[in-house]
Length: 199
Image (tube, rainbow, N blue to C red; front, side, top):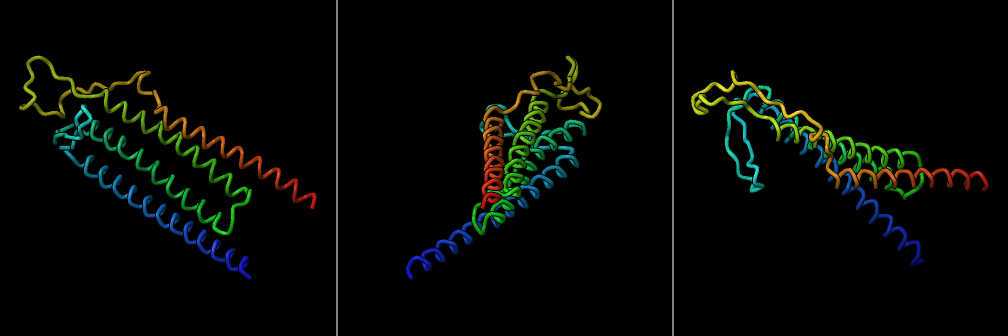
């Protein structure tokens, strides 16, 4: 009598925990998307944007920038938020799929593969956008007074080059680990199908 009661309690706890993970994932996804869209709209509308300092203190100033640089900054903020939002939704969906018990089924391996691809591609694209923004700026000549000039008439130096393609090694490594886990899950699916065929 004790074993079935314990099993039911364990199942209920697992379902509650996975349900909480699903709700949290959806909440994070919605918040990340909302923050990203709000920041992008405010930045693009401009003309002043919040520019963080390069020393890592988080301090910054309101700076007037032309539309091109404002759009680049909006994209550089939007891509990481979109990546986080997509991953949160994938985790929420994965929690929903395994709520009745973890089994090697195609839905689980597809979710794991999607997580790996989202993190890998999203973090790399985000890093490219951030690197481009960090190495781009307005070109002032020697006679230009920065406080008096219209920034919309100044040329923009876009910092294109091989250096902007460098990914974030930590996030790329984590994406590779997730990809390996997805491969292991797919191998488990094949083994489970072979085992079910023998029964």
